[in-house]
Image (tube, rainbow, N blue to C red):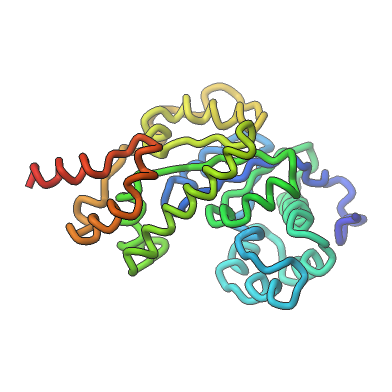
Length: 275
């Protein structure tokens, strides 16, 4: 398929089919990881796209609504340098979500004046809900699944500094659904999914980033990442969650949390002892 407007941008390489998708529960370190990866030359990432987030079949009437009417996504496209008219052409000319994604990346590269070959990645944690479709439509794509202690994810969602989820069950489900989906995908495609805990990332930024880039098949100059690039975990849950709320998280998430080395029962017991 010819990219809309591609004739006028012949020097911009088309986005290839070897991307890295950063997914997981929101508030799990995806933004930090994106900002670190953006240091890598010729490894580009748009603002959050959400192209695979919603389950509506692409090019059906309801599928267009979030792309045309979501004000945050419009702001993201402005930041990427893709105007409303250009995006409408991409939306109506692309045949699949994967085609829309790749066409959009090409448009972003053109807007940034990129003429050299490049690789790309997408940081939209909620694209976890379309991870199986990504795996099928982009068979060379790789996934970075970021996981953070559920108590801290839920506490951050309750506090609402970026995303606010007042309902404790809804906030818990943000974490639980993401890890369940990615566990299923990793079983199906073990070589295509790399799971990294946020706590391990911030403890050893250079080591974690080396693993991520190796997984993506992307080379980077030495010295891009240093231990001081990240802050230690602040454990917001200790002040952000009451006993009842923490109990809900324990009941909903403890079994899955143990799979990643998190012991919610022990954490709550230590907190009780400290008080």
